[in-house]
Each structure stands twice: as C-alpha cells, then as structure tokens.
Image (tube, rainbow, N blue to C red; front, side):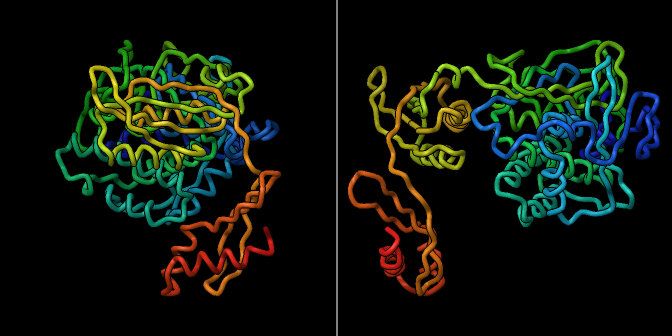
Length: 445
C-alpha cells in the first residue's frame, strides 16, 4: 500500500496488510529508513509553535504523493506543533490498549517525521454513532471537538453512502477504529492549536486493487472518492493507495480551497513520512505555514473589514454566518440590507478583524455564505483600554468588562451570558443579577 495508514483503510472496515512487514521497536532503524525515538522525535531542538501562532496564516498541504491520517499528524508535529498537544487531547478520550511511536524516516534524502499507533490489546468494534457520542461527551477543547466531529462526519457519511447503511450504524472495526480516532483527534488538536487557514493541493489518485475486510476493492477506494466530492484530483500511473479515507476526510473537511500552490510567503515547513517506498516519488507529505496575500496587501494596517454581498441567503443562514464569524475570532460581525443589480434585495455581511486574522475570517465568510468572493479593506481602530474583572455578588462570581481611557467615565458592562446563567441558577431575573454585578463593580471603575 502507498501509505498503509496503520492498516490503510481499516477505518472503513478494510483490513490492509503492511507491505513492509516491519516489527517496530524503539530505537531501531529499519531497512526502509525508519528510526523510532523516545516519543519526541528529532525536532526537540527546534522552537515549537505556540498556540494560535497560525491565526491569519495559510497552512498549505502539498500532497504530491497523496495524504493519510498518520502522515498529516506527523507533518504537523514536524512543523512545530508540540507532541504534547496531541497526547493531551488523546488522554481526554476513554481509549486504552495502544501506544504511540514518533520517529523519522529518510525519503530521497529528506528526513521526515513519522507517527504510528501500536495496538497492544483487542479493541471493541465501534460505530460512527458511538464514536461521535464519545467525542461529544469528552473534555476535549471546543475547537478540537468540533473539528474532530466534522472530520468523522465526513468519513462516516462516505462509508454510509458506499455501504448503503444508516450513518449511526457505520462500523469501524477493531484496529481501524482506534487508528482512525487517534489520527483524526490528533489532527484536530493540531489544527485547533495552530488556528491557520488550510489550503490543499490537488490529490493524486493511484490505481489497482486492494484487499479489504470483506473482499477486493478498486483504488482509489470507494470511500475516498465519496469523501473527495468537489476536490480536484488527477490520475497517476501507480498501483498504489496514495490517498486513504482518513486522509481524504481530514483534508476535504479542513481545506477552504485547493490549488497547485497558493500565493503566500512560506515561513515554516513540516514533513510527514509514509510507510512504504514509492517507485516514482518520495512517499512524503509537505505542510507549509506562511503569510497569505490578503494579509500582505494590508500593509501596516492594524485591522481589516471583510465584506461579501449575497442575494440568495435567508435570515437564518445569515445569522448562522455571523455567529460563525464571531466564533472564529472576528471582533464584530453584522449584516445590512442592500439593493443589488437588477433591483434584487440582498444582504451585505461584514466582519471586523485584526490584520493577522484577515485570511482566516475571509475563509469563514466564503465557507458560510453563498458568495464567491469577498472584499478586504484595511482600517484603523481607536479603542478604549479594557480589562475583565470578576466581582462577587449574592448570585456568585460574575465577570465584568471595564473600558476606560481618556474618553469620559469608564463603561462598566457585566457579561450577559454569565448573568443569565446565574439568574437561572438562583431563580431570579437577569436584571437583578446585572444590578448586583454593576453595584459590586462600582469601586473598581
């Protein structure tokens, strides 16, 4: 198999054989160039990427040899995402009976990171429904949980379409189930940590046949093709599995667009290594983090207003788009009625963001609306200095925002959601909690 994503397509009831036949042990170098290390790999000396450092930047998946789940996680670790981010996320799931190996492999002289799951004991057979429930009930961060559930939904939908079964009943058999969970949650944690906008390259499709749990399947695998609806692909003359279902689900879910190479300035590069040698190309995935063209065009402006005109969205969809913009980090988001060409009524959806967030907010606006283009305008912003303090009230602690500066008396505003929760718990009106929080904050203003 091209990538053998720890068993290739196990996650959709396929059971691939490892062609390299390796018995992996710590510290041993194998014939294909694999070297397993102490779990932190060769990048310890390199500065790790801090949380949110990718905000406003592009993370380009250069998948010239395809993509797999393990390669995606490996490339992100090689880029500089701390391994602890992946390990901490996995520790919040009720999974056991496996351990991770992070090492490196040489391909065409390039040293790449590898990420492998070694299953130590039998695993239960899991359905999509049980996995989604596990993720929903977990203590994963909101961002990681949301990304992981979206990727699993993409994968589950593809399997349900292929097998003509209900989504909740899609099976992920023993080994493949835990592999898919580890790869998807690990990738989700890395994406959430970075906060970058993902762009993918067109994907190469190998040919041939592959042995699966219930028979022989054509390559590209049926679930892969289903996952990649709308994604640009091209054929290559290789009887190899170059794109696995988990890899397809990850990239199809996360990428806002696909192109050969984006217009951006590369800053950091990470390499993820596949397990097998390919005859005509190095079995590697390259991820590149860089500054996008929208950000570059803003020059020294501190903020940006991003706008899109739409004439085919109802109010509910517009409201959802505004909520998504705010959740993604926009400082403000709003909609205004407009009249478009030929007298058609429409909406102008706008978002205010920092310059560093320009590309990511533009991507959200394109993803959540029917617009095929957005405008980005550099703006300046004058704002009051502000702080959040927590005050004690008879209804519990309430966070209060205090905005000061040389602009008249300070503005004091209790956080409404916190007041609403406190009011519900105490059986009083929200007005009473707001008044108590304002009274408690008087001495602080």
